[in-house]
Length: 299
Image (tube, rainbow, N blue to C red; front, side, top):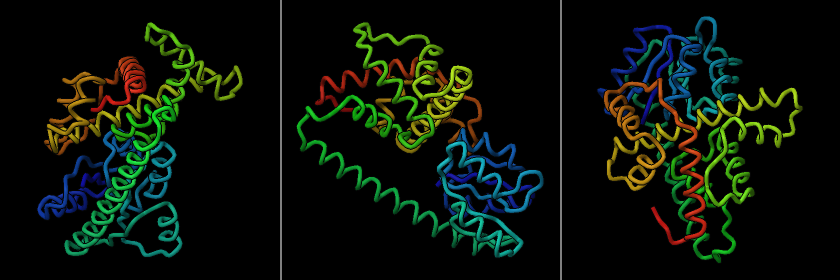
């Protein structure tokens, strides 16, 4: 499991990290002493679990969770709290908090809760894998004529683990727009022009098109960053993983992927990435068309 710790108390962060590492329960890919500084790091590193203190100055745990959810983070939360307040606890559970760890921190309690949450996480991923296998089997039994370009694109994004990311819909909208143009050169237009076209298709006013274009750009960059993180993590776990071998060198600067892998191996948090949006969209558009026209092509 990949954990991120948010607590304004350095001793608590240190203790939690020690319990996780000594108990061989996973890796701590980052930590922060405030909600404000944690948000961009969490969005970039995309941990499986965030251990977050309920009471922090400026931005408390619940407010931080709200902001992360609003920005598309879909990971899991475990709340740290020394205050037992039914209303606050109820609000935290409504926000999707999995469990509470009570302060002062107790090693046995922490290990027990992290074991429970990791087991649930593994079970959920297993069910998703089974569901994906069933969907793939059902898709393979249907006639290939029913397979659309959008289906192919979704399959590629799913392989990179970003189907549910906040910018995946923007990427799909761009691909469908490019497909409708039927430009045989397969070259994509300037990114600025693409963003404006998609923004106008989102039925915003002319005044808001520029603002929406910027929002689309940020969502797409964040989604591509997640793909880089996901593939780098796969590469750390298994360098021969087929998704890693296929997508990492084609869609990204592999030296950048290697840099992220080294940071992950050293329990660090990749905060700055060189995201080449133009290359990603160009390769994705070509890949989508090749796999659509040649259904037998596999990773």
